[in-house]
Length: 449
Image (tube, rainbow, N blue to C red; front, top):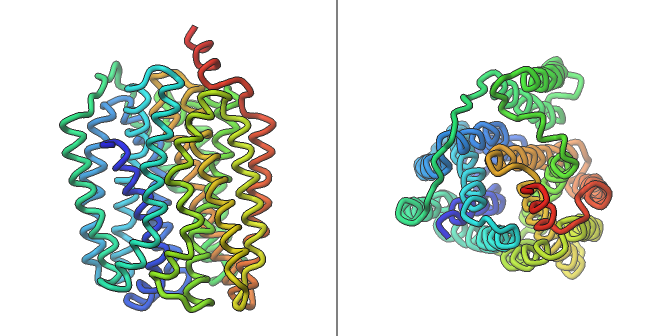
């Protein structure tokens, strides 16, 4: 529970912010691009620093990194609530992303070390995902209620007590293994990683406004490509790489990184655009928009426990593939939503996406973590979640760019949903073809031998 609360806050922040965006826009200004930066300032830093935080968890001790992330999350949440300008809010969102980047790999590493048996680890990760899934379920409704009654600042203040409780519980109950050796921090690799993600995000989010042929956008694409190539070259030559490229010798790890990006392109993109549709096109209040989003988020509160047990028995391949295909089917159904359409089709589509995501993500995480040596669990979990957060950034940027470039909000929404559906379907094929076919426990046992 102590470790689950950390990621609970990460997901709670994501879901409460989505229903608060119109209120933030009304209070602090900024167009659709400004709202994208409110979301993506967090995910860019989160994605960019997850690798370093995973390495630090292995080197300095995951408990220290986890407590440091909680402290940073607490301070940044209070600062966001006090922000008086959109620029300040975006800056503190970036600070929050650094705290979130520390929480994710550290919590996974501590859980992995606490549960040695692969089947028990799969169940523990299922519980971890279910507790954090409560944030997905409660976030839209609680966030909408807070926005409509106490104002948008309250959605950030609510995270402060959660951070404090998690910190106390971790200090008292969580045990940490002593790090065996120091690898050092790969500063050049870290700089190249964050530059790649930031440049790519800028190009995608601002291209529709500035113009795709504008010098700044062309330069951003160039910087993203050059820095990505530099990152790969640096990691191949570094004695202490931020991301050991040897991890990708495993078919499960390589396919898992790409699949993680794909699932978050879908999930985060839909979480960004659908609440905006509910409020700006359908005219719902923030509270009602939160209720309307519940079919997507509720399955994430209980289905991961069942998924964890299923993966422990039959492996990750089938649950993960089924999850992607369910999410793709639900996204396809959302094409039926419009200004005057009924809610039934939307409800079914959101339910399918919710069940699909809560099947795919726990399966994916268990498979990747179980496919690497124990001493690299922090690096592997950081890499996986970095790819997922990069997918989240791309998903939000994609949705915003397509809506900005269309004649109407609904037309842009439909175009982006088609692209998202294709991405999720491809993720299902990738899982079916390349993820391991044997049960996770069996594969890990063989590796241990």
